[in-house]
Length: 169
Image (cartoon, rainbow, N blue to C red; front, side):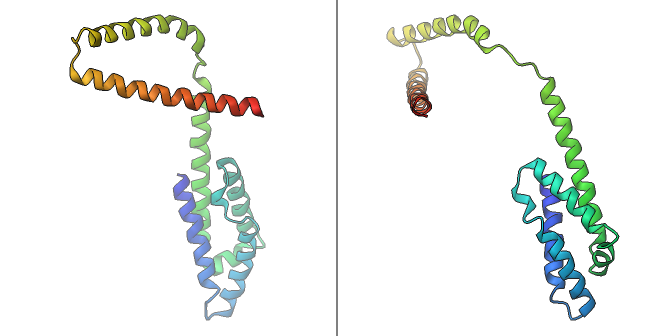
């Protein structure tokens, strides 16, 4: 939905720009006025979702105001503005629904789970290492273990770097 409303905003913007080159003076005047309104908001596609939604709501209200509606109609984008309003509302509804779903998720206590899982993880590691030491493991297991160990080393280094940066600040 965000992409859809971005495309609609871009279409409105391009239509206004194109109408400025119109041979009909009334259309040019209307397009210049609408362009001034749009330029007050800048490129609203580049801001965070909440800001974009608010900017679109305000822009649509400005364009549909008694003062600007005749100009929007003159350049033929009134139905596009209405579509942008609808798309923005659908996006806000989906966004709010998603936030509600996320708020209902439980916040697990990772430490308590780790206390249970870590001893099991250590036993799995011991068994895998034992099969490798006794040459009982398949070739793919040893390659997998080596690759996994490299990844673990990499992430330990990354965590150390991050911890050092955090301590510096």
